Image (cartoon, rainbow, N blue to C red; front, side):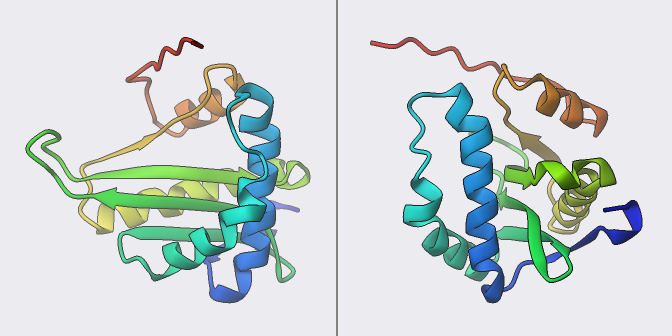
Length: 158
């Protein structure tokens, strides 16, 4: 896959099986290796319903990387209006995954670029994403894209 082969588009209902497969890849590779409390079967158990609902939600964005009519990556994001607690409208990159064999073609950067453009059009004043602290590659990727560290979640097993 080359830069010219990267096609990022809004997801459609017929993409749901590919979205579930992409989400399963994310869960297995990221959360499943870094967080023992994550249910790695969640995409297979609930992913189709979750993506179907997201496709209908005007506050959500669901994108796919399309390679010869096959989903090889996805991004899901949302926008949240300002509140008394958080004074700005913000966009959250909820999940993103690109199959390993397609990562060097800038598919991830294309997904994030589309997400940020959408967030701006929606009137968001800031964008955020979370990553496991042990996932140094993801943190470097997001930092190259202009994200900066803000919060650290500390956890204790009881």
